[in-house]
Image (cartoon, rainbow, N blue to C red; front, side, top):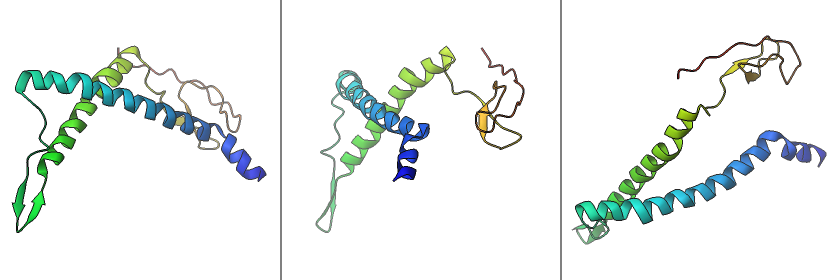
Length: 133
């Protein structure tokens, strides 16, 4: 039981749990943005963007390809919304994940600008990382 408690209290497990909760909440925000704002905007421009009624039959089997088209359009809209609302502004603000490098002693990944490995304590010397601005 002690090992299980140690596993649960590791930073990466807790970070993952927080990321899942935040991701689920953010997923609701993005879905609402697409459903309530982007889809009606497209409907106003090109007409009703609901393809669920499209289908064809072969030997009595119904193929609802309109639902597939709806799913693809929704995926593309959500992807575009996430890219332009989250990825692009984050990149412009310089909030990208720090560049990692291996520790020469224990080979764990450490931030590029670290002067000492957090895992084994070895001094590794800081490397000044420059990002294009």
